[in-house]
Length: 135
Image (cartoon, helix red, strand yellow):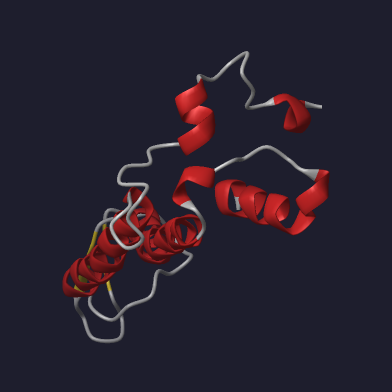
């Protein structure tokens, strides 16, 4: 199965296998690249939320037609953008934050030990890796 073979020395160099994906400052606890990504995501999620609520008001995306402009029957305000666009932007607020949490998870471990290989000896760690990457 692929989970037992990848990544290995046949496909990845020693530095990547040792430090993992995009690790800078691996000796620093709070300033390695995973923590920095967490910090920036914690700043960006509220900024995207502020942009969303400024642009769309306090409305939650509706599951109706995908018109480019519609009149809200409740207060007569015109809503800009399609419902799909509104729903995608609204969903990205949480997506950005949870992306940061995944980086926090990896940053809180030994940042040089970022290893996505499935290990039967450490099932809980292997499951967390798969959930944070594919979840």
